[in-house]
Amino acid sequence: MIRQEIIDNILERADIVQLIGEHVQLRKSGIRHVGCCPFHNEKTPSFYVFPQTGTFKCFGCGEGGDAIHFVEKAENKTFVESVKALARKANVEIEEEQETVEARQNRLHREALWIANKQVADF
Image 1 (tube, rainbow, N blue to C red):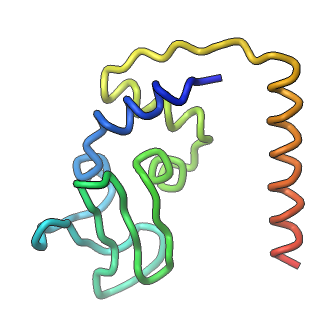
Image 2: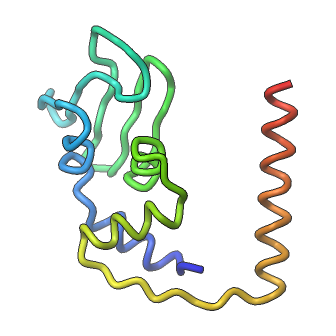
């Protein structure tokens, strides 16, 4: 389990423009950067990166989030894999804690609820 303080530190140190720039050709447009979305085909750029907040948003497909979510989606990684990849890039050492039985049960319960919710939404 990775503590929230470590995740926050990684997000603060991650350069989201450089990270997304490895996957998308971005151009500066005022205080933000814009390019074509890597998650769907488009001819007119609708993908925006906001360096001040460390977030991105595609106004074409609706995808958005922070650097961790971008790595998850663009590189098809899990949350933990994405956090570790960003930690390596940002030179942040991750101290993982052993998950207690109670914390594991809570996590599995949340995951089951997410799966059930997704199945209902797909239906």
